[in-house]
Structure formats: structure tokens, C-alpha cells
Image 1: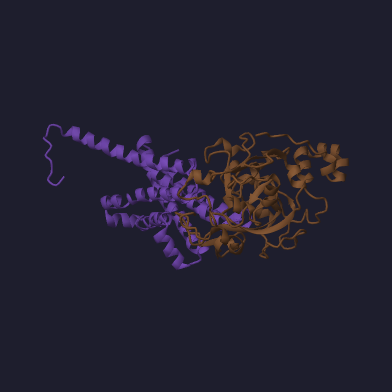
Image 2 (image 1 turned 120 degrees about the vertical axis):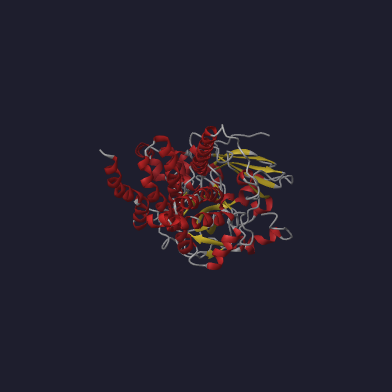
Amino acid sequence: MSIKKQPEIPFSEITPEALYRHRREFLRNTGIAIAGAAAYSIFPQNISSVFAQDNKTWKPSHPSAFDTSEELTPYNDITTYNNFYEFGLDKDDPARNAGSLKTAPWTVAVEGHVKKPAVYHLEEIVKRETMEDRIYRHRCVEGWSMVIPWFGFPLSNLIKRVEPTSAAKYVAFETKFAPDEMPGQRSGVLQWPYVEGLRMDEAMNPLTLLAVGLYGKPLPNQDGAPIRLVVPWKYGFKSIKSIVKISFVENQPPTSWNLSAANEYGFYSNVNPEVDHPRWSQAHERRIGEFFKRKTLMFNGYADQVAGMYTGMDLRKNF
Amino acid sequence: MNRSKVVPLSKPVLFAACLIPIFLLAWNGLHGNLSANPISDITNETGIWALRFVVITLSITPLRKITRWHWLTKFRRMAGLFAFFYGSLHFMTYIWLDQFFDWQSIAHDISKRPFITVGLASFVLMIPLAVSSTQKMIRRLGGRKWDILHRLIYLTAGGAVVHYIWLVKVVTYRQLTYAVLVVVLLLFRVVWKYRSLSAKLSHQTEEPVVPSSGF
């Protein structure tokens, strides 16, 4: 298998012109120069909402048909209440510690049963896509939920471009492994790097997203910068963050939480109020910002789009 | 300074110190310093302080025996009552803030979720200890009976640690630290009992040991 290095794109092509012209000043001033420049570079220049964070007034500039009209979770909550064990166990650890993650330059290796395996620069992947805002419900296996305006593109677009062969039955994902940048990886809480996987039809489902932003802004590191998966009908841990590798494989790939506790976290991990976690109920959830718990919906409310993929399957066994 | 003066003076100071966790929690809650999920924060904070005070209570007797600072016992009741105080707050947070008096859901949790069952049992077992903590109750029960009743704290400690281990997604050094502390503190009692028993026996070696029937 040959992995060819793609030529780098000139910065002038991908960076807003004003930023480009003042790049030296920019580099000098920010100190986090390279990361900053790359984060901007993958974003279209004309997003009016780039700096809006208010969940009451923010409007998607590139709306999608899959958007929920529920009230958005405030930007501040989405970016300070995270599970990202690479940066610590507490919810506020990722926001405090994720600054050490270097997100530029960033490459994503595409390998396995595909006609176009390569190590792609993030910019190459992103510039070919039409970005959308996708307002999705997000349900954590711990029993809390949010409504998040992601910014990204369907995973299926990328899959079509790299042309998987008929041998590819599953897609496996891998988070960056860099213990010096991700302090949690120096502990043995989970096996590192974090790995996840989807069945091919799940990966091709139009709901499945590769997100590079939220609220129309680049993803903060604690939310999985620079590129992460979003699978809204599955528990949050399936939506793997900071992806560096996508492999097309024949057999069901290992997944991190399943490796940690196979009886508690299955490969599918679809949101299902009727199938409890062995130790706690999944029937209700607390929406962040609300006092009363609400009922959890089958497939997190996306049954119309995804239930068909699981007909005939025993969801209790394939939890 | 005289020890008899240290103890009464330090009691109100320690009492105030024991209230710092709840004061901080209230302060942070009122100033919006808690996380996006404040109910979860309040549950975790009150729970961990209940467990900490159980551990503190359990460590007083071993510490006293090792150091021979007998005045330590004067603080045991306060530590135990603060364990009960934080345990009550933890319990109320669950009933009121988390479940909002949804008795059906609470009953379901207690019967179906082992971690809730164990946690509730650990809390309920503290109630008789809190009730019988007054001087009057000690006199009424008599020292021996009171001692036996208050060994229920061993079950509370074990239950609280199991509750903590069962509710997390992955067991880390945090849960293990408390588990080790409780095991060590309970083992100390076993060893101490064994030593004083064998000391007694060696005193009586001249007399033949008659096995009592039934044992």
C-alpha cells in the first residue's frame, strides 16, 4: 500500500487575505501562530456568524434539513463541560488542559480497502467540501444531553472520494496519540490511542458528520479539534475526537469503551431508552441548562433516519 | 498549653472548618462557578465529603491507639455527625434536585440499581448512629451495646466505597484510594483485636482452655 504525501497548499490560497498580508504581525502577536492560522484557513471567509456565541440569537448561515429546532446549548457550556479523557477525568479538565494539543499541521491517514489511500492534509480534505451547520441533539451515555450546532460535512462525501472497495465492511477511526500533548494518555485509564468504528452503512448515513467547528467557529481543542466524528443517534463516546486515521476494514474493529468494559459498552451503542446501562437507567436524561429530566428518545430522536439500518437486529443483544 | 484547654478551644474552629465544603459549594453555586451540570456537581461534592468524613471518623480510633492521644476521641462524634450531615445533603440532592420526588423512579432506582441500593443502605445505617450520638443515649444504651451498634459505621464505609466504584465509568486511583484507606482502617481493627485477644490468652496459658460447646 502506497501512502503518497500530497503537495502542500500555499497559505495564500487558504488563509483570509487580510490575515495573509499581515501574517508576520499575526504570527508575532499571537504566539500560537501556526495553530491559529491553520484553524482559520479551513474556514470560509464569509461566515457572518463566526464570532456569535449567543445561543438565543445565533442563526445558522448554512442550515441543513436535519436541524432540530430545539434551543441551543450555550457555547460556553459546550466548550467547558467535556469528556475527553486524553486531557483528564473531570468535565472541566479538557477546557483547561487541551491547549497543549497541536492541531496544525494536521494530517488524516486514509487506509485499508480503498482505491485512494493517502495521508491527507486537513486543508485538502476540507476545501473540497461544502460546509453546513448541523444542529444535532447530543446524548452522553452518562445521562446528560446538549443541542449543538456543529459545522462540518457528511462523512459519506469523504468516503465516496476515497472509493472503498467491496471488501470494506466497517470504518475504523483513531485519535491522535501524543502523550506529550495529551497528558491523559500517560495514564492507563483507557487503552490509547482512542479508537472507534462504524458499520459501512452507518458511516454512509447522511446524518453522520465530520465536524470541524461549532457555532460556526473552529472546534476548540476540548471539543475534538481539528476534526471529529458526530454520530447523533449514538452515545457521545462513539463520536471520536481529533481524528488522525480512517481505515476501511473487513471485520468489526475494536472500540475503546468496549475494550474497557465489554459488558457495558457495545459496538453499536445506539441511544436506546429501553436498554439500560447495566448499572444505570437510560430512560431519562438531563438536558444541560434544564432542571427537570426529560425522556430519552429512541435513537436520540433520529429513528426516522436510522431505524431501518437495524431492522431484524436484537437491540438488547447488540447494545 | 494544657490539653484540657486545647480540646474545647479547637472544637468550634474545627466545626467551622468542617462547614467549608458546603460553604464553598453554595458560594460557587450562587456565583455561577459550577459546571454546566450543577446538579451533578452538587451530588458529587456532597457525596465525596460524606465519604471523606466517614474515613476521618474511622481513622480516629487507630490514630489514638498509635499515638496515645486520647483526647482525639473528643472529635469522633463531630466527625461522624458531619459524615451524616454530608450524607443527608447527598441523599436530599438525589431525592429533590435529581429525581424531583419522582417516587416511582426512585423506587425503581433503589430496586434495580445496585449502586443506588448500596448507597442508600450506607446512608440509612448512619441514622441510628446519629440518633444515638448524644451523651444521654450513650448512657441509656450502655457503653457495650452502644459500641456494638456503632460498628455499623464499618458497613457504611464499605458500602460507600462500593457505591463510588460502581457509579463511575472507569475505576481510577480516586476510588482505589478510598477503598485502600477503608480496608486499612478496618484491618487495623482486626489486627488490634487479634493482638489483644492473644495477649489475653497468653495470660491464661496456665489454665487449660476449655472449648465451649457450640463453637
